Length: 158
Image 1 (cartoon, helix red, strand yellow):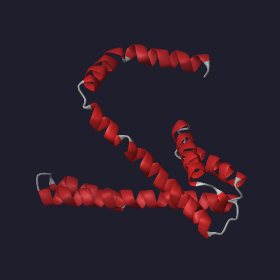
Image 2 (spheres, rainbow, N blue to C red):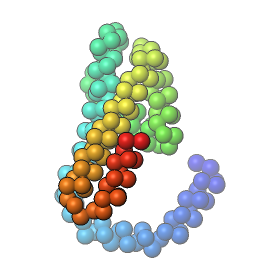
Image 3 (tube, rainbow, N blue to C red):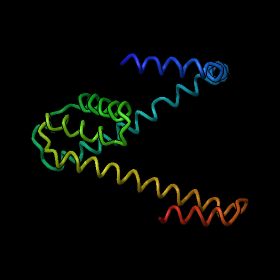
Image 4 (tube, rainbow, N blue to C red):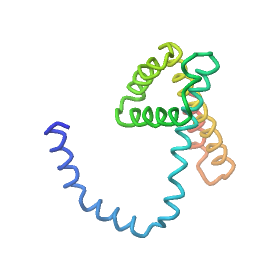
């Protein structure tokens, strides 16, 4: 980290100290067992997405991929997820890092990028389906103004 980054971070923490105290008080009242039960779900989602990437590679009969253990695949999946979250570039940095990391395992750049594109497209389509279901639920509920429901449908279509 640079000195400028540390200075900005210190300023942000100083200016938000009252909110941090409130957040701490709220966290003390939270049910910790419930929070611990929620921890596996995000990791499971990440591992399933990356498992699908490896399944795409295995279908292509890439020789070196078949010999990677599940433990190594899990480690790679968590590593790639970490890179996607650390570098906020809309996934572009994660795609290039994934391509570089998979190239070490014998996967061509085109196949690795294609697996990433499939992952992002299916994620986007799943989000669209959830949005349509949510807007339909709002329309059926009838408590929301019809203009808002119509505008929401138009935004989904566009």
